[in-house]
Image 1 (cartoon, rainbow, N blue to C red):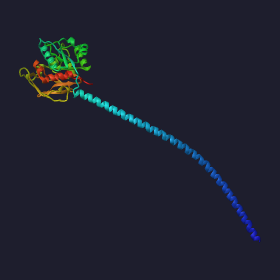
Image 2 (cartoon, rainbow, N blue to C red; image 1 turned 180 degrees about the vertical axis):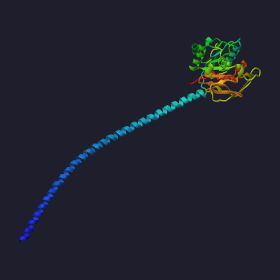
Image 3 (tube, one colour; image 1 turned 45 degrees about the horizontal axis):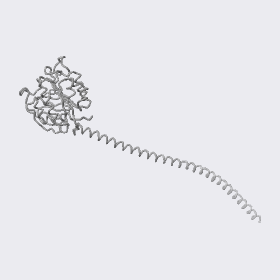
Image 4 (spheres, helix red, strand yellow; image 1 turned 45 degrees about the vertical axis):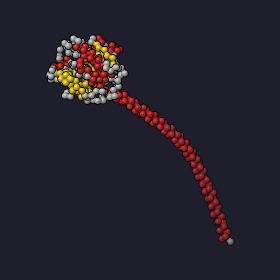
Length: 327
């Protein structure tokens, strides 16, 4: 009986200890759970903040992406516009250089100094050759006062210069008139020099009385000493001039094919600039028709008035004065 009673008391103590342990565990677990709930709630708040930030960043990314798309579209439009402008510019430039963009009409001053009436004959032949094209109206001038820049810009689109620059043959153009001719050309007009217009005595002589002729530099070539620059004598350098078109896309060569001018005075020792564009060559020698820059043209033929009766010669002159350069 005492043993049973002792056993019962021991069991009661065990139960009490277990109950207390359970209560303590429950309290401890409850504390942990409460702390977990607090921390979870804190984390949930931070997650919510992060989620809000993410949505904000996502919205900004969408806006930025839309802005980039707009910028890209604008860039593509600008790129296309630039490409169109470049194409248009190249088209117009090619039109001017190779497709022969011409004036609807041209007022031309033909300057030929009167050497005993000889140059007047040539000048009138040039006018007749030019006016075979109804778009061209040409007048003859023999007085250098007609070559002032003011007169040229007010009344003319092109100038044809048939000027023999050899002392004793003519009165050399003054520095002022040469400057006027070059400025006239540079302002968008054509300057066409024919035959002996590029004879430059200053290059062949040191006599201080000779004017410097910078026009030869502008046109792109010169003929120094006539006595040594003509084709070896066949009637003093007079013989058939066989001409070959070597640049068929140039504005000067429109409607022009290979041809021969009979009994012409051939200059074979022309000194040319490296930047000329050769259009026609003599069969045996160098360039005979060329352009330099946008406004300068040289045509070597034209010793005799009859040279200007040749249909190819006429077409060359007409193409030159009608050309409308695009720069």
